[in-house]
Amino acid sequence: MSNRRKYDQESRERAVRMYLDRLGEGDISQRAARLEVSGLLGINEQTLRGWVRSQVGQGATSAAMESMDEENARLRKENAQLRRANEILKTASAFSLPRSSTAN
Image 1 (cartoon, rainbow, N blue to C red):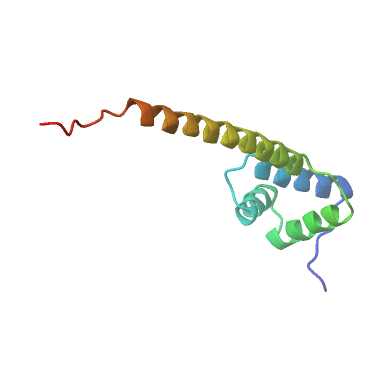
Image 2 (image 1 turned 60 degrees about the horizontal axis):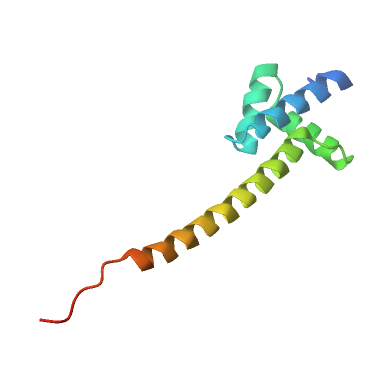
């Protein structure tokens, strides 16, 4: 006899949302997020992995992915600003360096 448990669709969706929300926080790997959520809910990590793959495979949009895209765009913009500021500082420092006198 099989030892499989059946989970309703709402439970699956909740687990996947929890996983994606945890990933969206950005300080954890996919596996660690799966382990954390599966431990909280008392389900197998591989079961949760399958649910996530299934939902993503169906074209479900995730708040975590959108959040990551927004974060990447913000970081790219910040990086460009910092590069410009760095170039300005390099140029300014070239003009303010003391020149050594060669005359004796």
